Image 1 (cartoon, rainbow, N blue to C red):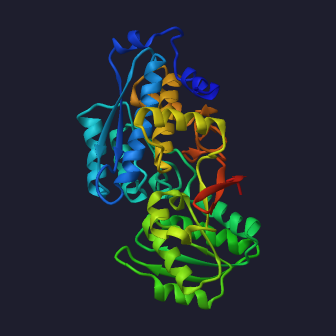
Image 2: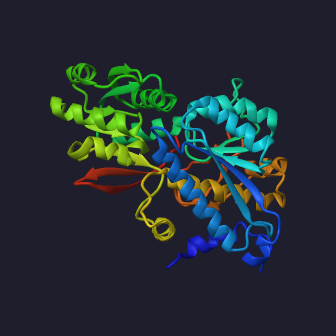
Image 3: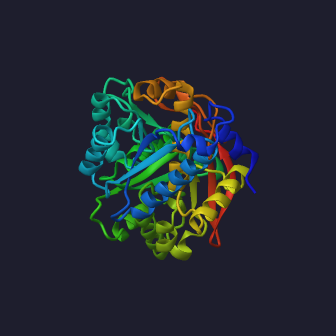
Length: 387
């Protein structure tokens, strides 16, 4: 059974009361572009993002669309390539004439894409957390680049709070992929917050994307006697690192971002995942998540596998709300509306999205802390992303 939250979300994006799905489908669609990694080593995340977006579009269209028009999702595959991702944005804008774009969840791609959005003037709502994906060197946001989840600063700060307050740690180490903007962008604010609030960083060990084992790095970390080890990388790397650390007998908590929630992490880590902690975008115990989970299973005959399913779903709802607020499908009007969105119903955080117009990122979006216990992600409660 669908929840009242889902119906509220659909009502929030429809301006024409009484518009039927049939009437909406007879009118020209509003095109929304999506850039996702549907192939390559991170294809699972991209496919999950596409599925979440498809579900949101289907729900909105069944409720009458937006401005009495259906949404049409056009998804392009960037395969994990920065160059292809930027080219996909150009194609969606120049050839497909979309009103807005969602994606990607790769900071490296959106850092390169942000200046292009400034020239082509079609808004992009991404889940790329590195501040360079939305902020210009002068500290002002790119006009057309927006973030739909907490920034790297917020994630790093939140994980430092988990280490300090939940795990009661005062000595921390960091294992870091120096090639990964996602990882580097979180490690620095973690280190700053942890150090400023009574903690000490006892070791930072860096590696490159070509690294295939971490034993020597972890041995160095173990010698520094940390109480917690931050591993803010991608799931497969995270899982292998945790497994090797357990084999070395490293006595510390292991803490990571939402990549610890993925099958890439749990499959590789295996039993070593037990007792590790991570922060995630969605409270899996909330009624709104249960409604989404039921709808996702009904449409795709499987459960959502990664947080990217939430990204695609929420991103479409946020864009749809901006279209409704703008009373227009023009990119310029949608961009202005995105700046002023308030209390849009979504899955993530505490269930609503408000844009910080000065920074083009969510305003004080909380996250949920989880611990892996015997193969289950146990919800430890919401944690604020504020300072």
